[in-house]
Image (cartoon, rainbow, N blue to C red; front, side):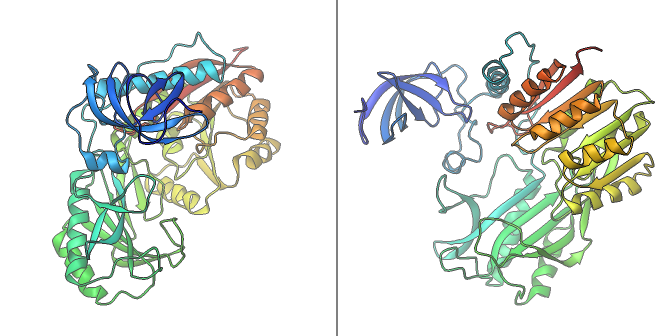
Length: 455
């Protein structure tokens, strides 16, 4: 049997942190994961749940506190998981994220002598998000906005999201109040009724242009003209109001049909001096300030020459490739999402960039096709999804034999696995730079430079 059972109370030392930021206590070697607890703390724990390998507990009281504890906590952000690291000082968060990268390199890639640079952080590590996707539900009899309690679909009403730009928080409240005024019915998940499912707000970091997207269950919005007129009057920075229709009983936020209700179908913003059109469904980094540091570091790692050919795999709407196009001979970008490639070509045109080619297709299929057509790469840039790179892509890209590979990762575990694979194909790990794109959360981006071992 386990050394503890549900509803027990125990006093324990917190000895570690999980990669999700949960404190780890050990009772006779049995791990208990504890929210809002830090290493070096002694806590009184209420046992919530036990399993074969570990259990979960909740802090009742702190007997000893960590020197890196942040006392200015917002409980609703803990309950919803919006800011799971807010109980740590920001310096401690940056150290924690670097240690995650060090740990996966040691455990997964078996690399113990790699120098990992200190995490690139922010001067003001809050109110950074330029996009919000906020669920709308009925709470205490009225239409409410907020976020789900962790591991549930119970909405916790929230007005200050802490990590979103203040103008976005204000816009959500303004739209919520307008929807209340017009007696719009919030979505009910259980019986799949009601109208408004989500409010999405996008805001340009440099331009301050704002888009409001109303995600609805059905197409018809009663008094839609008056609602749109009220939103535009209340929020002068709004240049676009869109409606997205999602009639499916699903957790996926956006449906397939999007309609323009007011203004443009996009907002415009900048990244490293280039202009970008951002539509309702476009992928655009949610932290513009840190995205510029991320991409500039990738460009610096590549150490580009004017004669270089660069392949930008997983190019999205072209942000990395277009940011470096003026430094190289040609950029080839590939992306599996057709709308993203369409956006990349539009962004290429509005920035008057002629030395770039974007094509739709899976990276592991397009790369050998391009190679057969005689396209070679001096520098390969990869920015894959969380699952990392396919083995076939690694093999094909290694056969193409670029001098340098710049890997932009959103998942330390998959990047460590892929780095190990590239090492087997003759590439050595030269530089590692963690970047904090999402302060107050456990996520860390990492930029890696791989060089051909014979160069």
